[in-house]
Image 1 (cartoon, rainbow, N blue to C red):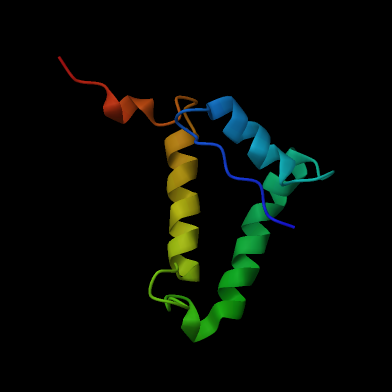
Image 2: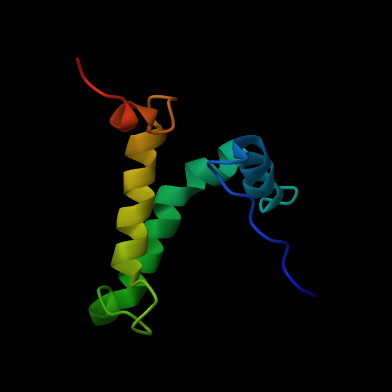
Length: 90
């Protein structure tokens, strides 16, 4: 079965949100979000010395994936989706 294409988060933000929520299946989004820190701690612990090692040159390491997730939380925490950094200052 071929995966469905991922909607563009900029061109179709609602479609992208629906796509992300569909990945949860029947799981409650709040429960998944609440369990995420423990899941990350487990992945980091299991990674050991391979934490910062990329499995392939064009693939991210566990540490890079975690940093990306943390960055996304910061960007989206204020509800603007990061639009604050694209506006010009007076």
